[in-house]
Length: 265
Image 1 (cartoon, rainbow, N blue to C red):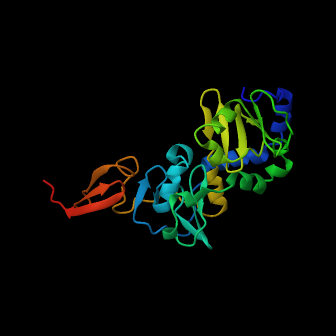
Image 2: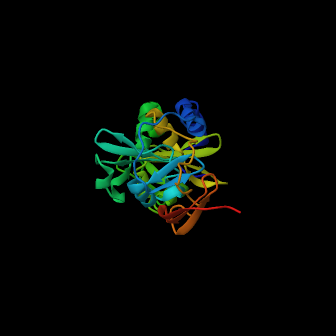
Image 3: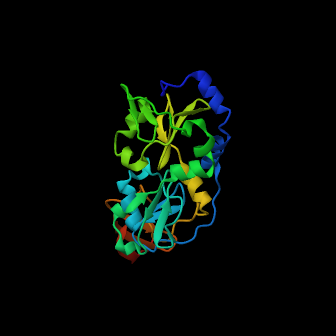
């Protein structure tokens, strides 16, 4: 097991009060597309076939800094302007740029938002679920205690301390929660799950957060001329041949550098 300081009886009692958590996990797995508000005007875009969304400019640079596809996940919304800042949602996070114009920003300005805390508060988990209450644990071998009274142990602790996860996730805001044979733990900016078979994985809270803000959008068609991520898009030099309009376009990364009409046969 991941946690060494919760008894099976205690876990069973707590599972009886996890209706909100069940709803969150279900929503993250099954949400349907909703309308988005605005689109980043950047021409330096790549398209993600799995979600039908594009990513480019400062958000692409920030996405790479935050771990890219493995950690942040694929984009699930366009870049959206909200007052004096911009946001774009990903499977596991929401990145925000605190500037009114994206051309004034760089990749380091795209920072992960505290969606773990926001979702826990929206669904009432932070108030009534026992796992979100500080336990004021005592530091011991293999146990990391945080100023807010929560702890990290075993697999979650090892994952959090490696590969920049401390900066991406922030501090834990819950203890471990056991649900249907899987362990979960919430952090300021996300959540993790664990099983013996799959190890530690990010929970796709980005879907929930995007839906709550009305900005979840999936399944859009690839815009004309935008390369597909993973098929040359995003890095290297490559060529796209479009037989629907008989054009050939050469790219460096995701930027087109040459385009011409072609004749087949």
